[in-house]
Length: 190
Ligand SMILES: Nc1nc2c(ncn2[C@@H]2O[C@H](COP(=O)(O)OP(=O)(O)OP(=O)(O)O)[C@@H](O)[C@H]2O)c(=O)[nH]1
Image (cartoon, rainbow, N blue to C red; front, side, top):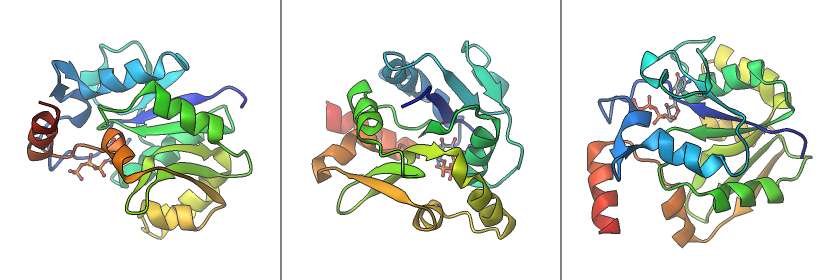
């Protein structure tokens, strides 16, 4: 694959967590630092889609949303608009268990015919751990214009690739949305 940029989505309301989600501590480190650690063996080309100053301590470019209050789809719209590459790894900021191995698997299995490539098991899809082509921009634009913000609708509307995983592999891809989910994760790991 040509040069890959990684965009981490750090916007939104965090209404379930009630604090900036990417900065929630897990094993004494903010979620976002776990994610960056997993990315760095692959590339240092990392950008954050955020307008929040709390991320200023991280030495990566920050890009504010160009459309507001459109959820992850709005964040992806901004990422792909600014990206200089055809293919882009898009990650949410609430996946502290993500690993270099899983990201490498996504990249190595990616089929360049696909405009979106994501992991899914029988029961779960992971739209916010995916490779997105700039080609999906017009489809995202029209979804936003129609206020159809569901990620699964976007994926269904473009040529996509599903990388099948076992149910047990969902654990490492899980996003943590609330303090209760974080407690459950800590209990699971203890
Ligand atoms: N840049 C950007 N990222 C967003 C936006 N909305 C959500 N995200 C990110 O998308 C990912 C999934 O977010 P969600 O869990 O759907 O939404 P959230 O606003 O973070 O949380 P809730 O308010 O609890 O739903 C996280 O990484 C968020 O930071 C947005 O409007 N802009």
